[in-house]
Amino acid sequence: MSAGEPAVFNGNSLNPRFRNSEIVIVVVLVVEMFVADLCDRRGGTEKLHLQSIFRSPGQKPNTEDEVLISDFCSTLARSKLRLNAFNHPMHTMITTEDFFVPSDAAGIDLHLRRKRLANVEDFTSERTLLLMHGATFSSGSLFDAPVGGASFMDKLAAAGFDVYAVDLRGYGASTRPPEIAGPVDPSKQPVRIETAIRDLGTAIDHILESRGLDQLNLVAMSWGGSVAGGYAAKNNGKIKQLALIAPLWLRETPGRIDAGGDLPSYREVDLYKYEETWRAAAPKDHRDALIPSGWFGVWAENTLAIGPRGTAPNTILAPSGAIQDIREYWAAGRPFYDPGEIRVPVLLIHAEWDVDVPFDTARDFFSRLTAAPYRRWIEIGQGTHMVILEKNRWQVVNTIIGFLHDWLRF
Image: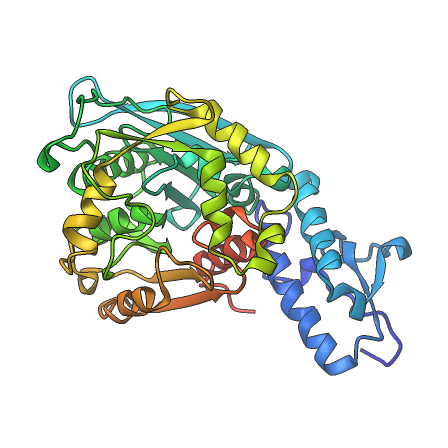
């Protein structure tokens, strides 16, 4: 490239297998590395064509889409690129399917949601993934709230994945086991980790059988990360790669999620009180900007619409089994499973301000993944335990896409 010539990144220069395919959005990751390198080497005085990644070979760039590389390094310009990529016609046709799968218990059905590009039906194991929620909010709440115009599931589907999300019994649209009045014997708490692992296994088996696959990728968050880890440790053959976002692990105290005292069958969670707790994990001068304007309202509306609703306004119900798990296992120094038995590639994502899974907890968990063929820990700055719904959620999405495409070599 000669001096003064505009810096152009052409997505068609990638491996030919990706030309005109459903996963062009993955070049966003490459573009950001490309621009970062140009900023370092060229001083930020050159021009970059934002639309160039979508041009066919020989097509002239549009000068209206030129920006100085120094400007492109700004947050606004990077956001424009990601928006252009997501709004490209190849990625705007996402189809959604909702269905129910019988669990191993009579009368208990599990809700599964599937999102994919409408023009793609057949996917390999590498392109198939299942999302697993945490202790309080359903998969629809965490992974399919359209904050910023697109949900977590949308982003992954637009990147060319066949994306499934499961609600365990008692969560979201899945069947809710009967509530027991008053304090509940810990052994009878609904949806303990043993039950959760069975439900996760039911969902995985259904997907593999219905799609004719032997394996899939598993992405899980928080308590769901513990469930996914426990499942993977005993079912390595069914998991292609495992991505865990702040999985629960050993800690000295139960944490903020446990208010103490006797546990009812279901906790009633006030979303607007939860917002205060959510933001409180960040330093005071970062709390207002943590969740972009309007995002919390979209998420709360979506979460309440999914339910199950509590008796008080703006509340949902969540099984207390996960809290009992914390008391008996994670806060008692008793691992439910051995991470050393996980023999698949593992990605661990953790955020700087996560007080629910402290840094030392994440480090201890990572150090025990001794049998994984390879493992990676990504620490995201300026994020809390709910980073997937915050201003830096794009880092989580890009990191997961990059990990699942690890076989790419640029």
